[in-house]
Amino acid sequence: MKTSKNITFLLNIKDSEEGIDALNAIKKQVEKDNEHNEYIECHECGEKMNVSQSSYVHHYQVGNDPKEITILNAPHYECKNCNNELIDVLLYADVEKVIEEEIFLRLNNRQEIPDKVEFNEFIN
Image 1 (cartoon, rainbow, N blue to C red):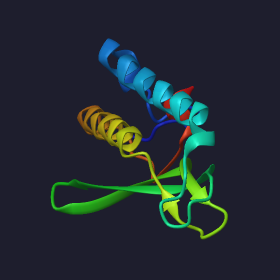
Image 2: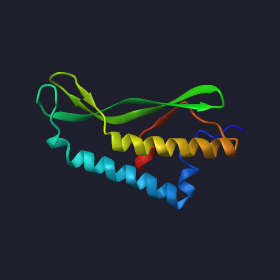
Image 3: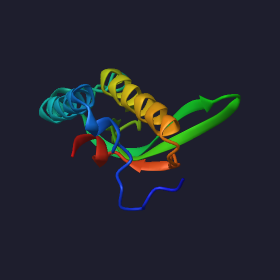
């Protein structure tokens, strides 16, 4: 069964109180990262790191079939001096937990699983 293009990836997870709590935890972590952005120092060169966006790929498996979903415009820290990159592991642990739950619900509901999703869906 195909889903409509205007339906959000996180439609199923947003239907539960636990899902809303998980998404709120992601939103709070992003806000915290943005507040502390001025304090993040590159461990390679000592320069200030800035929040930037890039793609983040999450690998999962359905049966024996390896699959992946790309999160577009995902935040990470980047050093403009030495190009060192750093991700917030707590943030992405929460993101991956939400993705896994949504994939489980989509499989049970026989819904399509997209190859790509915008990071903003996790915080809006």
